[in-house]
Length: 228
Image (cartoon, rainbow, N blue to C red; front, side, top):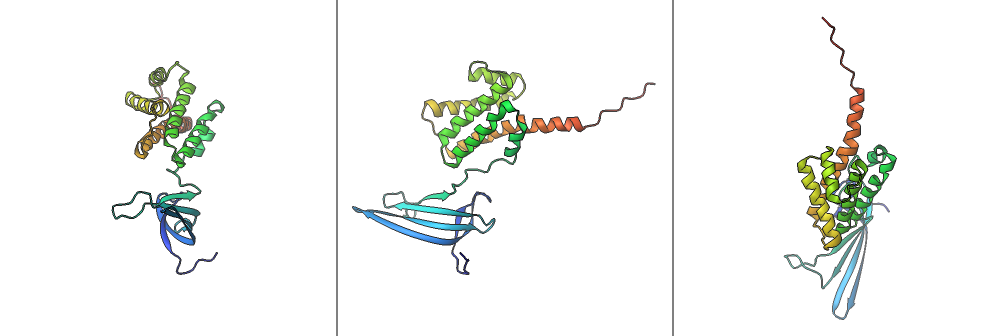
């Protein structure tokens, strides 16, 4: 469908560029319904990012019973197809698949499933997944001590984390435990913190460790000083 000079522009989420970006509305379709005094409707927009050119379908749904903003306007429920990404995957994500040993392969798979949960705003599920991921890492590296807390202690003992990092790790594990047993659903900001710490740990152990080993092997040995 060719674009006209009068193509409408709107702000929409772009997975490639990240965050809200200016998009051209290539096509729009509206519908409305009314049921015993309650009304609502949908707006389907086919939009194209003005930056990267990616296409997506945005759905704005509204209902007369929905909440309003301070100006009294109804707040629509916005969905994207493909779904909006909660946050971009780290640049080293695909390197992880190549770097982990065969018996560590589930590390990459678990992290991938966590991003799927994030993308679909399944925050409690993501918190549980992060706990399972970190438990998997600790057991793979240090063996199973029989409980999360014993595994964390051994993880610190073997030098994978510092004392401060261990305390942060315990907070992540407790958040995952609360999501499983106490109906805890982290806020978006809290979940960003959980993911930040988990990604940092994975990168430090699997990506940085491999790169440091390669660097070490590439450094020429010192030439022995001649004896006098």
